[in-house]
Image (tube, rainbow, N blue to C red; front, side):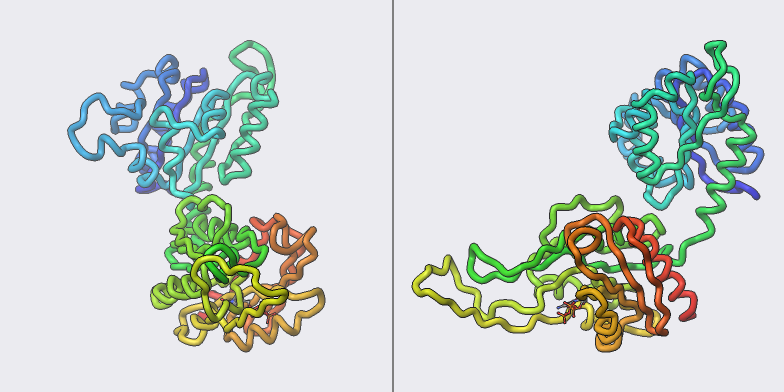
Length: 410
Ligand code: CTP
Protein backbone atom coordinates (compact mmCIF):
# COMPACT_ATOMS: atom_id res chain seq x y z
CA UNK A 1 0.00 0.00 0.00
CA UNK A 2 1.18 3.49 -0.70
CA UNK A 3 0.02 7.03 -0.25
CA UNK A 4 2.06 8.31 -3.18
CA UNK A 5 0.80 11.72 -4.29
CA UNK A 6 -2.32 11.44 -2.13
CA UNK A 7 -3.47 14.68 -0.55
CA UNK A 8 -4.00 14.33 3.17
CA UNK A 9 -5.64 17.15 5.04
CA UNK A 10 -4.81 16.85 8.72
CA UNK A 11 -6.85 18.72 11.32
CA UNK A 12 -5.17 18.98 14.72
CA UNK A 13 -7.12 19.97 17.84
CA UNK A 14 -5.95 21.04 21.28
CA UNK A 15 -5.45 17.81 23.20
CA UNK A 16 -2.36 16.26 24.74
CA UNK A 17 -2.33 13.57 22.02
CA UNK A 18 -1.28 16.35 19.59
CA UNK A 19 2.30 15.50 20.65
CA UNK A 20 2.01 12.39 18.43
CA UNK A 21 1.19 14.42 15.30
CA UNK A 22 4.77 15.33 14.25
CA UNK A 23 5.55 11.59 14.12
CA UNK A 24 2.36 10.95 12.12
CA UNK A 25 3.32 13.63 9.58
CA UNK A 26 6.78 12.06 9.18
CA UNK A 27 5.20 8.66 8.55
CA UNK A 28 2.85 10.10 5.94
CA UNK A 29 5.66 11.97 4.20
CA UNK A 30 7.75 8.77 4.19
CA UNK A 31 4.86 7.22 2.23
CA UNK A 32 5.15 10.10 -0.30
CA UNK A 33 1.85 11.74 0.68
CA UNK A 34 1.21 15.47 0.45
CA UNK A 35 0.18 16.75 3.87
CA UNK A 36 -1.48 20.03 4.78
CA UNK A 37 -2.14 20.83 8.42
CA UNK A 38 -5.03 22.83 9.86
CA UNK A 39 -4.77 23.64 13.59
CA UNK A 40 -7.20 25.02 16.10
CA UNK A 41 -5.90 27.82 18.33
CA UNK A 42 -5.94 25.38 21.25
CA UNK A 43 -3.72 22.94 19.34
CA UNK A 44 -0.96 25.55 19.20
CA UNK A 45 -0.70 25.23 23.00
CA UNK A 46 0.40 21.59 22.64
CA UNK A 47 2.51 21.53 19.48
CA UNK A 48 4.02 24.39 17.55
CA UNK A 49 2.98 25.61 14.15
CA UNK A 50 6.65 25.76 13.17
CA UNK A 51 7.14 22.05 13.91
CA UNK A 52 4.12 20.95 11.87
CA UNK A 53 4.87 23.31 9.02
CA UNK A 54 8.53 22.19 8.84
CA UNK A 55 7.58 18.50 8.78
CA UNK A 56 4.72 18.89 6.28
CA UNK A 57 6.72 21.36 4.12
CA UNK A 58 3.57 23.45 3.80
CA UNK A 59 2.19 26.46 5.65
CA UNK A 60 -0.11 25.61 8.56
CA UNK A 61 -3.59 27.20 8.53
CA UNK A 62 -5.59 28.24 11.58
CA UNK A 63 -7.88 31.22 11.04
CA UNK A 64 -10.56 31.35 8.40
CA UNK A 65 -9.79 35.04 7.79
CA UNK A 66 -6.40 35.70 6.22
CA UNK A 67 -3.95 38.12 7.89
CA UNK A 68 -3.40 39.72 4.52
CA UNK A 69 -4.85 39.11 1.10
CA UNK A 70 -2.38 38.65 -1.70
CA UNK A 71 -4.34 36.25 -3.91
CA UNK A 72 -7.98 35.34 -4.53
CA UNK A 73 -7.16 31.97 -2.99
CA UNK A 74 -6.74 33.67 0.42
CA UNK A 75 -10.47 34.38 0.65
CA UNK A 76 -11.60 30.94 -0.33
CA UNK A 77 -8.95 28.72 1.20
CA UNK A 78 -11.50 26.79 3.30
CA UNK A 79 -13.18 25.76 0.02
CA UNK A 80 -10.01 24.86 -1.83
CA UNK A 81 -8.79 22.78 1.14
CA UNK A 82 -11.92 20.60 0.92
CA UNK A 83 -11.47 20.25 -2.84
CA UNK A 84 -7.75 19.47 -2.55
CA UNK A 85 -8.07 16.68 0.02
CA UNK A 86 -8.27 13.00 -0.92
CA UNK A 87 -8.95 12.30 2.74
CA UNK A 88 -9.54 14.54 5.75
CA UNK A 89 -8.15 13.25 9.05
CA UNK A 90 -8.94 14.97 12.34
CA UNK A 91 -6.55 13.81 15.05
CA UNK A 92 -6.75 14.32 17.91
CA UNK A 93 -10.43 15.34 17.77
CA UNK A 94 -11.42 17.03 21.03
CA UNK A 95 -14.92 17.09 22.56
CA UNK A 96 -15.21 20.77 21.66
CA UNK A 97 -14.34 20.34 17.99
CA UNK A 98 -16.49 17.20 17.71
CA UNK A 99 -19.45 19.25 19.00
CA UNK A 100 -18.73 21.96 16.43
CA UNK A 101 -18.49 19.44 13.58
CA UNK A 102 -21.79 17.82 14.58
CA UNK A 103 -23.46 21.22 14.85
CA UNK A 104 -22.15 22.41 11.49
CA UNK A 105 -20.20 25.30 12.98
CA UNK A 106 -17.28 26.68 11.03
CA UNK A 107 -15.42 29.37 12.94
CA UNK A 108 -11.90 28.32 12.00
CA UNK A 109 -10.10 26.75 9.05
CA UNK A 110 -10.36 23.23 10.49
CA UNK A 111 -14.15 23.25 10.91
CA UNK A 112 -14.89 25.27 7.76
CA UNK A 113 -12.82 22.91 5.61
CA UNK A 114 -14.73 19.97 7.08
CA UNK A 115 -17.96 21.38 5.70
CA UNK A 116 -16.53 21.89 2.23
CA UNK A 117 -15.11 18.37 1.91
CA UNK A 118 -16.61 16.71 -1.18
CA UNK A 119 -19.15 14.07 -0.11
CA UNK A 120 -17.34 11.30 -2.01
CA UNK A 121 -14.10 11.87 -0.04
CA UNK A 122 -13.49 9.88 3.15
CA UNK A 123 -12.93 11.57 6.47
CA UNK A 124 -11.52 9.97 9.59
CA UNK A 125 -12.13 11.32 13.07
CA UNK A 126 -9.87 10.17 15.91
CA UNK A 127 -11.44 11.30 19.21
CA UNK A 128 -8.92 11.54 22.05
CA UNK A 129 -9.74 12.78 25.54
CA UNK A 130 -10.19 11.71 29.12
CA UNK A 131 -12.28 8.54 29.55
CA UNK A 132 -15.11 10.29 31.41
CA UNK A 133 -15.33 12.96 28.73
CA UNK A 134 -15.38 10.37 25.96
CA UNK A 135 -18.18 8.43 27.66
CA UNK A 136 -20.28 11.55 28.31
CA UNK A 137 -23.72 11.57 26.64
CA UNK A 138 -23.03 14.73 24.65
CA UNK A 139 -19.78 13.43 23.12
CA UNK A 140 -21.41 10.07 22.34
CA UNK A 141 -24.44 11.79 20.79
CA UNK A 142 -22.25 13.99 18.60
CA UNK A 143 -20.07 11.08 17.47
CA UNK A 144 -23.15 8.99 16.69
CA UNK A 145 -24.53 11.84 14.58
CA UNK A 146 -21.24 12.18 12.69
CA UNK A 147 -21.11 8.39 12.08
CA UNK A 148 -24.64 8.42 10.71
CA UNK A 149 -23.72 11.25 8.37
CA UNK A 150 -20.81 9.79 6.47
CA UNK A 151 -17.90 10.22 8.92
CA UNK A 152 -15.67 7.38 9.98
CA UNK A 153 -15.13 7.67 13.73
CA UNK A 154 -12.20 5.60 15.00
CA UNK A 155 -12.79 4.88 18.67
CA UNK A 156 -9.91 5.68 20.99
CA UNK A 157 -7.92 2.94 22.70
CA UNK A 158 -7.95 1.99 26.36
CA UNK A 159 -4.92 2.56 28.52
CA UNK A 160 -3.23 5.13 30.70
CA UNK A 161 -4.50 8.67 30.14
CA UNK A 162 -2.91 12.05 30.75
CA UNK A 163 -4.95 12.38 33.95
CA UNK A 164 -3.05 9.39 35.35
CA UNK A 165 -6.25 7.31 35.26
CA UNK A 166 -6.85 4.32 33.05
CA UNK A 167 -9.76 4.41 30.61
CA UNK A 168 -10.88 4.65 27.00
CA UNK A 169 -9.67 7.86 25.41
CA UNK A 170 -6.14 7.33 24.11
CA UNK A 171 -5.49 8.26 20.51
CA UNK A 172 -3.99 5.32 18.56
CA UNK A 173 -0.25 5.42 17.87
CA UNK A 174 0.88 7.24 14.70
CA UNK A 175 1.72 3.92 12.92
CA UNK A 176 -1.87 2.73 13.46
CA UNK A 177 -3.31 6.05 12.25
CA UNK A 178 -1.10 6.00 9.12
CA UNK A 179 -2.25 2.43 8.34
CA UNK A 180 -5.91 3.43 8.81
CA UNK A 181 -5.43 6.35 6.42
CA UNK A 182 -3.88 4.04 3.82
CA UNK A 183 -6.81 1.66 4.07
CA UNK A 184 -9.36 4.47 3.77
CA UNK A 185 -7.69 5.97 0.71
CA UNK A 186 -7.27 2.58 -0.99
CA UNK A 187 -10.88 1.56 -0.34
CA UNK A 188 -12.13 4.85 -1.68
CA UNK A 189 -10.04 4.28 -4.78
CA UNK A 190 -11.71 0.94 -5.36
CA UNK A 191 -13.98 3.13 -7.35
CA UNK A 192 -17.67 2.88 -7.62
CA UNK A 193 -18.86 2.30 -11.18
CA UNK A 194 -20.88 5.47 -10.75
CA UNK A 195 -17.73 7.58 -10.35
CA UNK A 196 -17.85 10.29 -12.99
CA UNK A 197 -21.22 9.14 -14.38
CA UNK A 198 -23.98 11.60 -14.96
CA UNK A 199 -27.32 10.79 -13.34
CA UNK A 200 -30.67 12.50 -13.78
CA UNK A 201 -33.21 11.68 -11.08
CA UNK A 202 -36.80 12.87 -11.01
CA UNK A 203 -38.40 13.08 -7.56
CA UNK A 204 -41.53 14.16 -5.74
CA UNK A 205 -45.00 14.80 -7.12
CA UNK A 206 -46.01 17.06 -9.98
CA UNK A 207 -48.83 19.60 -9.77
CA UNK A 208 -51.31 20.18 -12.56
CA UNK A 209 -53.15 23.46 -12.33
CA UNK A 210 -56.94 23.56 -12.54
CA UNK A 211 -57.11 27.32 -12.06
CA UNK A 212 -54.77 29.82 -10.42
CA UNK A 213 -55.47 28.55 -6.88
CA UNK A 214 -56.14 24.80 -7.30
CA UNK A 215 -54.23 21.84 -8.61
CA UNK A 216 -54.25 18.06 -9.00
CA UNK A 217 -51.36 16.27 -7.30
CA UNK A 218 -50.47 13.29 -5.08
CA UNK A 219 -48.89 12.53 -1.72
CA UNK A 220 -45.34 11.84 -2.92
CA UNK A 221 -42.79 13.23 -0.44
CA UNK A 222 -39.76 12.93 -2.75
CA UNK A 223 -37.79 11.07 -0.05
CA UNK A 224 -36.80 8.09 -2.21
CA UNK A 225 -35.52 10.23 -5.09
CA UNK A 226 -33.61 12.52 -2.73
CA UNK A 227 -32.05 9.49 -0.97
CA UNK A 228 -30.93 8.14 -4.36
CA UNK A 229 -29.43 11.51 -5.28
CA UNK A 230 -27.48 11.75 -2.00
CA UNK A 231 -26.19 8.17 -2.28
CA UNK A 232 -25.12 8.62 -5.91
CA UNK A 233 -23.13 11.78 -5.14
CA UNK A 234 -21.29 9.90 -2.38
CA UNK A 235 -20.25 7.37 -5.04
CA UNK A 236 -18.75 10.13 -7.14
CA UNK A 237 -21.57 10.62 -9.66
CA UNK A 238 -22.69 14.00 -10.97
CA UNK A 239 -26.38 14.23 -10.11
CA UNK A 240 -29.14 16.46 -11.44
CA UNK A 241 -32.26 16.16 -9.34
CA UNK A 242 -35.43 17.38 -11.04
CA UNK A 243 -37.76 17.88 -8.11
CA UNK A 244 -41.46 18.58 -7.98
CA UNK A 245 -42.77 20.63 -5.04
CA UNK A 246 -41.38 18.98 -1.88
CA UNK A 247 -40.11 20.19 1.49
CA UNK A 248 -36.71 18.53 1.50
CA UNK A 249 -33.23 20.06 1.73
CA UNK A 250 -30.97 19.61 -1.29
CA UNK A 251 -28.43 16.85 -0.63
CA UNK A 252 -24.81 18.02 -0.61
CA UNK A 253 -23.26 18.24 -4.05
CA UNK A 254 -26.52 17.73 -5.97
CA UNK A 255 -27.61 20.05 -8.77
CA UNK A 256 -31.32 20.63 -8.10
CA UNK A 257 -33.90 21.93 -10.54
CA UNK A 258 -37.30 22.72 -9.06
CA UNK A 259 -40.32 22.24 -11.28
CA UNK A 260 -44.05 22.20 -10.73
CA UNK A 261 -45.93 20.56 -13.59
CA UNK A 262 -45.20 17.39 -15.58
CA UNK A 263 -44.59 19.47 -18.68
CA UNK A 264 -41.94 21.49 -16.82
CA UNK A 265 -40.38 18.27 -15.53
CA UNK A 266 -40.41 16.85 -19.03
CA UNK A 267 -38.73 19.94 -20.50
CA UNK A 268 -35.99 19.95 -17.84
CA UNK A 269 -35.41 16.22 -18.34
CA UNK A 270 -35.31 16.39 -22.15
CA UNK A 271 -32.53 18.96 -22.04
CA UNK A 272 -30.44 16.37 -20.16
CA UNK A 273 -31.36 13.18 -22.04
CA UNK A 274 -28.24 13.25 -24.18
CA UNK A 275 -25.66 14.01 -21.50
CA UNK A 276 -27.05 11.58 -18.96
CA UNK A 277 -25.72 8.05 -18.38
CA UNK A 278 -28.45 6.88 -16.03
CA UNK A 279 -31.98 8.24 -15.79
CA UNK A 280 -33.96 7.30 -12.68
CA UNK A 281 -37.65 8.15 -12.65
CA UNK A 282 -38.46 8.31 -8.96
CA UNK A 283 -41.09 11.03 -9.34
CA UNK A 284 -44.78 10.28 -8.91
CA UNK A 285 -45.69 12.04 -12.11
CA UNK A 286 -49.31 13.06 -12.63
CA UNK A 287 -50.51 10.98 -15.58
CA UNK A 288 -53.13 13.59 -16.59
CA UNK A 289 -53.56 17.35 -16.52
CA UNK A 290 -56.62 19.55 -16.98
CA UNK A 291 -57.13 20.22 -20.67
CA UNK A 292 -57.76 23.88 -19.98
CA UNK A 293 -56.18 25.99 -17.31
CA UNK A 294 -58.70 28.57 -16.15
CA UNK A 295 -57.25 31.96 -15.32
CA UNK A 296 -58.25 33.30 -11.89
CA UNK A 297 -60.54 31.22 -9.63
CA UNK A 298 -63.38 28.98 -10.80
CA UNK A 299 -66.63 29.89 -9.00
CA UNK A 300 -69.06 27.24 -7.78
CA UNK A 301 -71.96 27.89 -10.11
CA UNK A 302 -73.42 24.38 -10.20
CA UNK A 303 -73.73 21.20 -8.12
CA UNK A 304 -71.43 19.17 -10.30
CA UNK A 305 -68.37 20.07 -12.22
CA UNK A 306 -66.50 18.39 -15.02
CA UNK A 307 -62.83 18.75 -15.65
CA UNK A 308 -61.53 17.26 -18.86
CA UNK A 309 -58.10 15.72 -18.33
CA UNK A 310 -55.56 14.99 -21.03
CA UNK A 311 -52.57 12.62 -20.87
CA UNK A 312 -49.26 14.01 -19.79
CA UNK A 313 -46.01 13.10 -21.52
CA UNK A 314 -44.18 10.15 -19.97
CA UNK A 315 -40.86 11.61 -18.84
CA UNK A 316 -39.11 8.30 -18.21
CA UNK A 317 -40.45 6.54 -21.33
CA UNK A 318 -39.40 9.59 -23.37
CA UNK A 319 -35.84 8.98 -22.20
CA UNK A 320 -35.98 5.20 -22.84
CA UNK A 321 -37.30 5.60 -26.36
CA UNK A 322 -34.26 7.61 -27.42
CA UNK A 323 -31.62 6.05 -25.19
CA UNK A 324 -28.32 4.85 -26.62
CA UNK A 325 -26.74 1.54 -25.67
CA UNK A 326 -24.55 2.97 -22.93
CA UNK A 327 -27.50 4.66 -21.16
CA UNK A 328 -29.65 3.05 -18.48
CA UNK A 329 -33.28 3.79 -17.70
CA UNK A 330 -34.58 2.97 -14.22
CA UNK A 331 -38.17 3.34 -13.07
CA UNK A 332 -40.45 2.74 -10.15
CA UNK A 333 -43.71 0.91 -10.21
CA UNK A 334 -46.10 1.60 -7.38
CA UNK A 335 -48.63 -1.22 -7.26
CA UNK A 336 -51.11 -2.76 -4.89
CA UNK A 337 -49.56 -5.78 -3.18
CA UNK A 338 -48.79 -8.81 -5.32
CA UNK A 339 -48.95 -7.07 -8.67
CA UNK A 340 -45.40 -7.87 -9.64
CA UNK A 341 -46.53 -8.64 -13.17
CA UNK A 342 -47.63 -5.04 -13.63
CA UNK A 343 -44.11 -3.98 -12.74
CA UNK A 344 -42.71 -6.46 -15.29
CA UNK A 345 -45.07 -5.04 -17.91
CA UNK A 346 -43.87 -1.54 -17.13
CA UNK A 347 -40.28 -2.70 -17.53
CA UNK A 348 -41.10 -3.94 -21.03
CA UNK A 349 -43.44 -1.18 -22.14
CA UNK A 350 -41.17 1.63 -21.02
CA UNK A 351 -38.05 -0.23 -22.25
CA UNK A 352 -36.43 0.01 -18.83
CA UNK A 353 -33.23 -1.63 -17.66
CA UNK A 354 -34.47 -1.89 -14.11
CA UNK A 355 -37.78 -1.40 -12.37
CA UNK A 356 -38.32 -1.00 -8.62
CA UNK A 357 -41.65 -2.47 -7.61
CA UNK A 358 -43.06 -1.12 -4.39
CA UNK A 359 -46.38 -1.38 -2.68
CA UNK A 360 -47.97 1.20 -0.46
CA UNK A 361 -49.35 0.40 2.95
CA UNK A 362 -48.60 3.83 4.38
CA UNK A 363 -46.75 2.30 7.35
CA UNK A 364 -43.66 0.49 6.05
CA UNK A 365 -43.79 1.64 2.43
CA UNK A 366 -45.38 4.36 0.37
CA UNK A 367 -45.20 8.08 -0.04
CA UNK A 368 -44.55 9.87 3.23
CA UNK A 369 -42.87 7.13 5.29
CA UNK A 370 -39.10 6.79 5.82
CA UNK A 371 -38.88 3.10 4.94
CA UNK A 372 -39.53 1.08 1.83
CA UNK A 373 -39.80 -2.52 0.66
CA UNK A 374 -38.59 -2.79 -2.92
CA UNK A 375 -38.38 -5.65 -5.37
CA UNK A 376 -35.99 -4.88 -8.19
CA UNK A 377 -36.44 -6.58 -11.55
CA UNK A 378 -33.87 -6.08 -14.26
CA UNK A 379 -34.19 -6.49 -18.02
CA UNK A 380 -32.54 -9.95 -17.79
CA UNK A 381 -35.39 -11.02 -15.43
CA UNK A 382 -33.12 -11.14 -12.38
CA UNK A 383 -35.13 -10.38 -9.25
CA UNK A 384 -33.68 -8.79 -6.10
CA UNK A 385 -36.05 -8.75 -3.18
CA UNK A 386 -34.93 -6.13 -0.69
CA UNK A 387 -36.14 -6.35 2.91
CA UNK A 388 -37.78 -3.50 4.84
CA UNK A 389 -35.12 -0.77 4.76
CA UNK A 390 -34.77 2.92 5.45
CA UNK A 391 -35.12 4.84 2.19
CA UNK A 392 -31.40 5.76 2.49
CA UNK A 393 -30.38 2.10 2.76
CA UNK A 394 -32.83 1.10 0.01
CA UNK A 395 -31.18 3.75 -2.20
CA UNK A 396 -27.72 2.29 -1.50
CA UNK A 397 -28.85 -1.23 -2.36
CA UNK A 398 -30.61 -0.02 -5.50
CA UNK A 399 -27.39 1.67 -6.63
CA UNK A 400 -25.50 -1.59 -5.93
CA UNK A 401 -27.89 -3.39 -8.29
CA UNK A 402 -27.50 -0.62 -10.90
CA UNK A 403 -23.70 -1.03 -10.65
CA UNK A 404 -24.05 -4.82 -11.14
CA UNK A 405 -26.18 -4.16 -14.19
CA UNK A 406 -23.54 -1.77 -15.58
CA UNK A 407 -20.91 -4.53 -15.19
CA UNK A 408 -23.05 -7.24 -16.80
CA UNK A 409 -23.89 -4.99 -19.76
CA UNK A 410 -20.23 -4.36 -20.61
N1 CTP B 1 -43.28 8.24 -15.08
C1 CTP B 1 -42.84 9.33 -15.80
N2 CTP B 1 -43.73 10.14 -16.45
C2 CTP B 1 -45.04 9.90 -16.39
C3 CTP B 1 -45.50 8.81 -15.64
C4 CTP B 1 -44.60 8.01 -15.00
O1 CTP B 1 -41.63 9.55 -15.86
N3 CTP B 1 -45.88 10.71 -17.01
C5 CTP B 1 -42.32 7.35 -14.44
C6 CTP B 1 -42.31 7.41 -12.93
O2 CTP B 1 -41.34 8.31 -12.45
C7 CTP B 1 -41.99 5.97 -12.55
C8 CTP B 1 -42.66 5.18 -13.61
O3 CTP B 1 -42.69 6.03 -14.74
O4 CTP B 1 -40.62 5.68 -12.63
C9 CTP B 1 -44.04 4.80 -13.17
O5 CTP B 1 -44.82 4.55 -14.27
P1 CTP B 1 -46.39 4.72 -14.26
O6 CTP B 1 -46.87 4.08 -15.50
O7 CTP B 1 -46.86 6.09 -13.98
O8 CTP B 1 -46.70 3.92 -13.02
P2 CTP B 1 -48.01 3.94 -12.34
O9 CTP B 1 -48.48 5.30 -12.07
O10 CTP B 1 -47.77 3.04 -11.19
O11 CTP B 1 -48.82 3.27 -13.53
P3 CTP B 1 -50.37 3.07 -13.61
O12 CTP B 1 -50.90 4.44 -13.39
O13 CTP B 1 -50.56 2.54 -14.96
O14 CTP B 1 -50.63 2.11 -12.51
